[in-house]
Length: 324
Image (cartoon, rainbow, N blue to C red; front, top):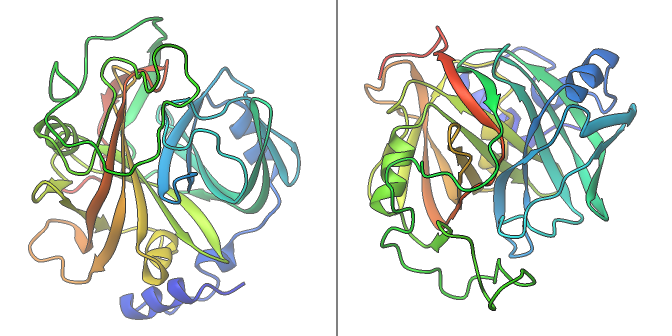
């Protein structure tokens, strides 16, 4: 199916090649892709939560926790945690990214999701590999159990940001007092100082976009620390570097400005989830290496400690990263 948003972005970018974007994908999972998926310990996902907002999140498990059981079905032995914005995910479109930072390999899977107990079942509609550009090399080093003292930007992850009014109770059904949340959890409508430090120090984040009736997509963005700039307590901007001209993220944004971002604390296991609206700025100004910019305005900020048990050691920046 042709994607009107991708075609519009390709025309604006001057891309005339055929068979780009969604037209280049296939629903079936090739054998080599199924083998790659089965070796991964981490999956990034993008979907609409029960609050009606688009979020990006992370799932983890041992090798084999995500398995292609046939050419169009992926079974994931994990579900989003109780304090995750995608808690109780069941139904609708989903975008997934399996990424191996050590080898800089990645594959994307888009489809529909259902839940069976503590498993997610994904029926694939699009599967495809991406190039290794802008992926920082990292390797898993340990999986400590228990709280960590490290949170990017601050020892006090609560910050001073206001609680989001009218937001759904992400803590419903957990043990402890009503509304109880783990130490370090926060939900706000704007960036706090700690969030700003985390974002501006990041070399990697993940972006979820969706075009109703077409697909939900989860993609990777990487660069040297500082490539994402926080403009004020509600807005940030990132550069779009030279890519594969598929424009699946930008194509979705052309049709629908809903957007979810995920920043990981690779060493400490925390997650910073953002949801809001994004638009393409076709004037990159003097940003090195940028073909265009994406400007994002946040509606909700959710910080979840211990979102992942995995701990990663940084080894090398991508040689493709432009200077900041």
